[in-house]
Structure formats: C-alpha cells, structure tokens
Length: 153
Image (tube, rainbow, N blue to C red; front, side):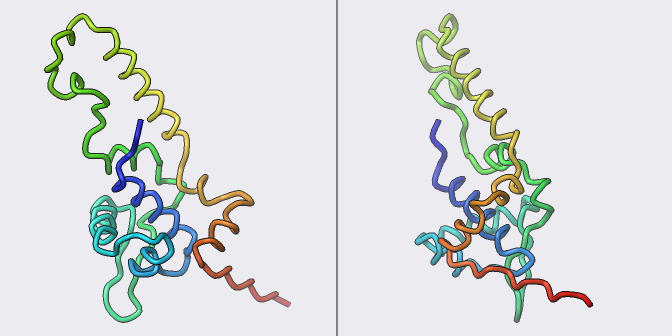
C-alpha cells in the first residue's frame, strides 16, 4: 500500500497544526518546515478545511487551527477522505482483468487493505502528537516550545 503525496501532506499538516496548538499556523511556515510546495499545500489545507479537520481564520492575525480535538481525528478516516482511489489493483475499480471473477488475489488484497485501514483507525491525531517524541518532532519542524504556565501563588 502506498499513500499519495496528497495524503502524506494532509497528515503532516495535521501533525504540524496539532503541535502548534493552541497557537496558529500558516501555510507558508508549514511548507517551509517540510520543504514542500506552498501551492500544493494550499489545496491540501482547503480540503482539510472543507472536511472540518482544520479551521482557517482569515484576516490580520489569522491562520490555521485544528477544526476539532485531536482525539476525534481518526487517521484511517483521514486517509479514506484524502486518497482519490484505494483500488490497489485494476480489478478493484473496473474488473477489466480477464481472471477477475475466479481470482482469489482480489479477495486477499481487499482483506489486506481492510487490515491496513483498520490499523490506522486505531490511531488518532492525539496519538501521533503525544509521547516523548513530540518535543523532538516539534524541534525538527522549528516549532517553538510552548511557554510554561506562570505559577499561581
């Protein structure tokens, strides 16, 4: 199974924006952090916004924020929503292969795809943002550490 660049960018955008919460992100800073095209990323962000995964705030002081809690963003669902075509082989889409009807490969690949998506359904964005690695990921992306909360006396 290979995900498209579009889905890869979608997942990476969600990770970046999630790591910046509660602050805002911009398409430019995400593109620079990952070394990817701003134009391509604009299309990705537009779709993530339409899906409700990202909220775009316009105007001065605007930016990108998560559209919902990271615990509610299921990675398998993001993959389903951003992949154009999950047909692993030709017979999934058109049945054009001459052995499609009796072929057991189609069943095996369908089962494998189901297992792949089931594993991703077991993860949320919160899972990808948590753990001891999240600080290192943020550092590599140039995301500043959040300011510590002032002590209340």
